[in-house]
Image (cartoon, rainbow, N blue to C red; front, side, top):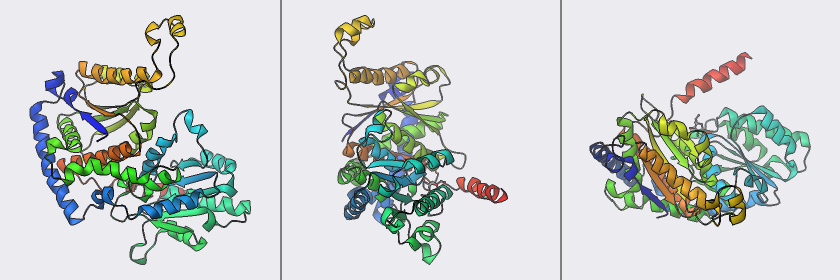
Length: 438
Ligand SMILES: O=P(O)(O)OC[C@H]1O[C@](O)(CO)[C@@H](O)[C@@H]1O
């Protein structure tokens, strides 16, 4: 297993007052144990295809084929889509420096872009800058009806038309959506299929925010040359204790769920995940959607907050250490010790930091991650630590599956349905009304 989780700094037994009591944790673990029984039924009945994804391999060839079609002669590949239709792919793409501050600008061809937010200025700018004749577009929407993705797709079709290119939309576009239900409407298909655009099928039994291990997340990963089989193998590692019928106390994702349940019951209404790695920044955003939409309903839920270290030590940490003690922290570190530029002894002395001499940047980051977890604990803030020595496809696959399982189990244990998001529809309907009114 690549993921090492320790919860001692979250419990009263480890940090004293402020930690979660052993009794509360045990009670939560019991509830999660019951949730695991339900999960086991879900697996056996096939009700949750997500649970079978780690062991599935027969769909990978189609993903690889689509990826190589997209890469052929392309300078740029643009993924249109939002929420669960984008964040999983972004998380995986970050292994190849996507959206890594500074480094992301130097990525090799094809450049990959995820346009998940709808912003007219950005979209205009990107459409003007992209070399359209060598750009490929992928529109992803499970429902096929998300307004943002439809507007983006319409805008691109119009831009291609205006550019008067020889290639047709079918040579430049790929769609990814559910099949039409009972032959009914699917707006994205209605838009693209008449142009001859080919579609990959979105798994009908897997929700958008749980779709990272399907073609939704794996297609961008394959375009970037990542080992998509290894991502699934890593996910299988996280699922193994569940597959083999381990007790909750022996299943890392169940332990994580129990911590969250105990914290929620204890009135700790905020869950902060602080990752000490640029290449986990998109992961934290993916987790925010997963957690918020899955757990936040019927008056339940804890507020997910994403943070990155060490940069957010210089913006958020003061509150975390000295503000209200209403949070459960997860501090994530990777094996960066010994990595990065070496600090020259003389220059370090000149800077008044002789202790930096002979150390590497990764040494300081490793020390900072450790210090932040320990300082939170010393200030009575319950803190879980997750360490991943080597951040690669396998490790990220395991991490993603761990957090999906943790989320589902937390939902089950708190008696909320972790798979729907009914409340967000109201605003979408109103926005369409306002648009019509002008
Ligand atoms: O993939 P779709 O259907 O376009 O939905 C995009 C996102 O919108 C939501 O439905 C919320 O509005 C998310 O759950 C989903 O990931």
